[in-house]
Length: 466
Image (cartoon, rainbow, N blue to C red; front, side, top):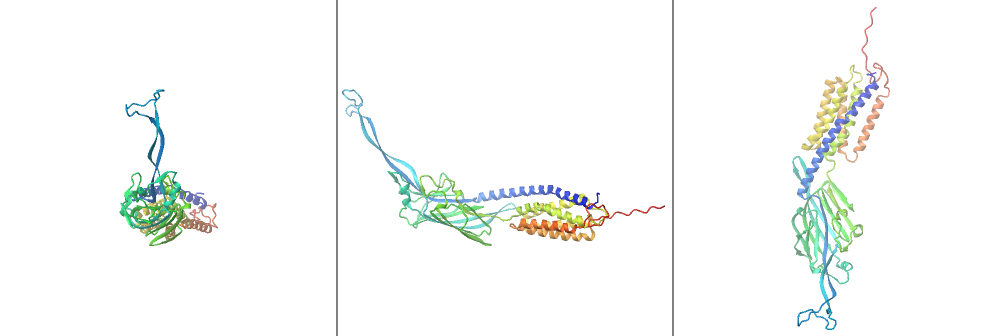
């Protein structure tokens, strides 16, 4: 019973499932290293400038109103300087007068009528310890104009807009991301820019621009991870280009057209004002910090990094171990002494440590060389163990070929982001089908010595002498 094919197959299956414990421990180490990597990338990115969201410009026009109120006051006798009283009734005499004053009202906020944005980025790699952090510099070019007639509907009777005191505001994620010289031109005339005091951004006193034909703004930014922009125009046309080969277009709107090559990307958006839930003109600031909900742009995505590959290798580790166990079980079937459960555990631990070995090397030399070194070391160890420890003899070659094929297939699975699940599921199905075919004639309940692939010979007993 203890040496029957069915019992041995059952024991090996239990041992394979137990290997999920060291694989889970390896996965925890991978998660910890990935979190540390992400924290490092985020820290360096924030120091460089961080993820950027541009919102604006918005034209802010102060508003005043002249108010007049009829009031009454006590009459003062100019001769005596005393309050005058009626000579007969003795009551205080009052007079009416008009009190006029100027009151500031909520300003009018105008968004551009036409808004054209061109953002060009160049990436570079920063290092902290063993970690690489991709960051970018962006050249931002904005061209826009305002339909000042829109402001009329926002004014109440008697209110007067102070066009000479109008100012322009552009909001950023952080002012410390600004680099180089920012330039605002109104019909070709430069206007000084100043930082905003209450939130991140820049402002300029542009004055009366009702007759201006167009405004342009040029500025440079440092950033990391994302570059986003809000479509503030009645008609917004945005172009973002860069040299990053793996952009991830994100945000409220996807590009109308895009071109992505190994050398970079170009994407274009055309957004009408009806597609965003922000009024074109109003008395409340339309860009009050919620503009990120309508912003869009590009994330500097790092596809299929080696932490993700190592994590997936740990997830596929149980399949790898199970296939190796199954191979050993099938090719050692004719040996007099079966492979001990401890030996199966040693094989499983070697394959679990493979993932950890691969990750530790990948942090220093990259995924490809690390996978080659770790898999070669693991295959060499298991082949040597099969020949010297398991005494497989010539069948050690079968184990070696299986391991080479298995780790080659695993490499292809880890390299493929979109087809990893398909490849893994197919490998598992093929392995199961092959096992079912090879063991189709096996007598699982048969005792040792019965014919079959997993048959194990009993030692012949000596004939009894009379």
